Length: 315
Image (cartoon, rainbow, N blue to C red; front, top):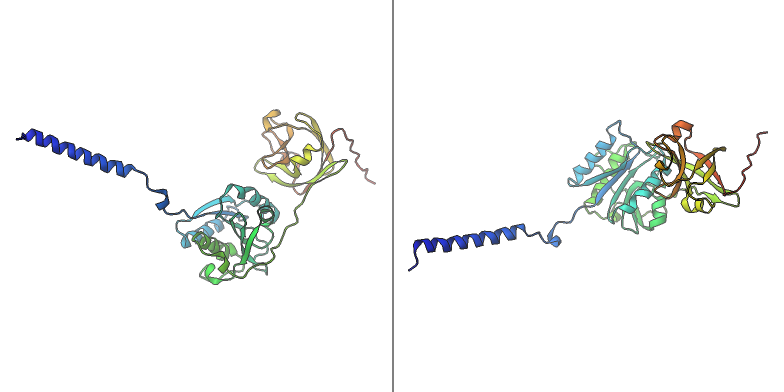
């Protein structure tokens, strides 16, 4: 016969084995296929600023419809009414987000007029909820158009009176939330066969040099953003550390062409290729726009290396 001590030992080992088995099962990760799918992010951009409650109200409308919505911000500091600026921001951001992302963009100087509120789907599988004013032009030109539908179905709008001046709250935010909830954008309203397109301002290169425009500021740093691409600049023959004479609004300035800001002394000016592949003009740890009184829009001309630029005399 087994002694009482032997029996207790056997029971103890059984208990430990059972506990270990339970713990190993508990620590085992769940099957990814069984995990609930995450809702797509809503990526939000406006010219509303942050001095009022407009952005907070739009977000409240979204979470009222889609409580688990993931809302991310591009910016709410787009220069008021500047559709081209917003279009560039949207163009720059979208490549970093996956298919299914919902972009909510409200820069809408035509609010309350006959301009359409639309949902646009790109061939990349991303959705854009915005006014039909050209804001999505650059993205669609690059990524392709899958389809576009006007938001006219009241079920996609706020369930209250729709104002004539705050479609960000009443139409665009509810529509973005419904998309995040998995609604089919094709039932939002009729198909839009032709979207409004912006005319993109392009630089030109000829035998004299490259002519372009100041299209924005890299705020808060005040660096000038031009529409002269790195390829267009390289075709002019310059190498790093060359001195480059640039006409800014027909006033010549000479700048060192460098790789990054700290390649010049603090407070010195420079010409560089920015992170989007465009010619930029800056002051190291300063604000070029404020120091030299330059604001967009403006014109820029860079002569070919070794070329001589003759300015026309005023009559």
